[in-house]
Image (cartoon, rainbow, N blue to C red; front, side):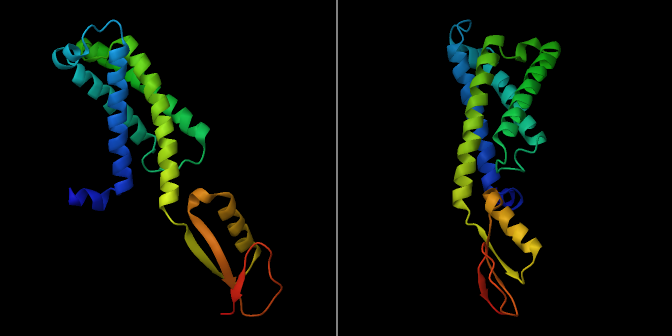
Length: 191
């Protein structure tokens, strides 16, 4: 377990485990809401319900991994995240179809898969937004000190201000001669 945290960052592992639990809960809740399933307890224990839900959760988690949503935890564009999640759940439906051809006893019932996927899509989207907000507040911005001033430095500082998700902040610059100060970045002294 200790070796795992030296290879995988704790934040990514936390996100992975929390999404696994949320997905399983969404599909289980959809099982309770499905009128075709009489007793959900019997379905989960005796009708391969746990295995069915585990396969659906694994297919969604595999899609999240293949779309690099564990490498890029910070959300740069909400619409792109929503589109990626829709694509992942579409591939999960296709995966359920393939499993239905191979072993029909291991697919989730249609109503349960549909309502569980819609619920999981909304929950995962909201969870990713909350997790991104918490990750931004937990990490202090990296401070950058520039040596010299140039148009490139001004563009970089503007980019840092317009993209706070990068986690970088310009604190100022040092310069040999006392030139006219620049408005958006402070001159902190000489070298």
